[in-house]
Amino acid sequence: MNYLATFHTHYGALQFNNYCKKEGLPAKMAPVPRELSASCGVCVRVETACAPDLSKHEDMECCYSVSENGTYTPYTTSSDSPLTSEEGVK
Image (cartoon, rainbow, N blue to C red; front, side):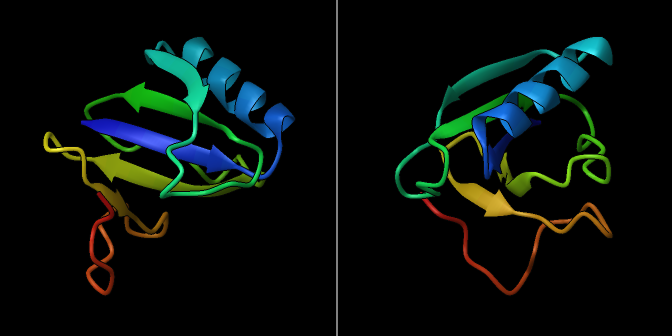
């Protein structure tokens, strides 16, 4: 599964990117898609079988699962399941 995490600051994105690499997760910093956020402009894309641990990253604005068709679906960190009250963003 692919995930995309947005952050309030560049520093927060860099910290999360380093955390993912330390955990052995393939992570890459990239520009944030405009339809998602305009805060710091940088996101981290992660490919992993399960959602990354977000409890240690207080600077994170939101995390999205990315479907094969390019739809972004926010998920809640409490249950690691997609939010059912919101439509995915394309």
